Image: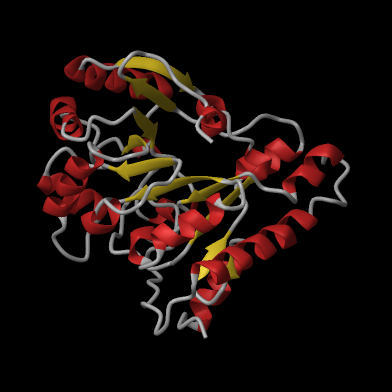
Length: 310
């Protein structure tokens, strides 16, 4: 029913993916594991107040039009477009059931905090950023609303190649991943299936008039795209985002087949580059997470938890 090859399905299962509906997926992350044990949360928890053990990491589609070098996902195993799209209700139901199955496995661990385990069965946040490009799903606005109707916040991360959909969605926080300061670097770093650089620039312009919180996220990879802060600044200026997140490439997952540990910048290098971008734009450092090697910039150097927005 999924249209996904048997070998790809086996690969996804080995890496902890649970198919939601016929073409979506859910997967727990490292920080859910740690949060379940009372060992802290992810940088989104640190920056915005998300509870990592109550967050669903999902995607409405595993289809992606990029083959980014830094991606920890199996971009070498492409997934075809489905013959028929699931409804938002079917996807949400599949995600909730999949998350419950994944969470149930923590019940028998002596390191799991029982209160957090019980809370995990009632997720409050959805990170629509697991794999694939979510704007490929034609009912993304309705999917977001379906999650919101359940009292859940939504973080959507898009590569910006579908500006028409970027202008339609109003998640709790809208991200555009900008992983190059120019078209040539984009072709190298993201290996797009078609030339969509102008689409990304258009999406950044659309973001400026978004009715929701906005963020531009940059994954910095040494030797690939960690240069020309002025170029990044000029592009981001068109979006005027509430936040900018600059994060180090991490040598994890399938990216280890494409890049080396030398491509992974240290936190102090990310902080220095972030300050250069901030200076170019008049933004300020609002926070940082050394363990995740990520720096948060905002216009006034302040940040606001998502709980204040719902």
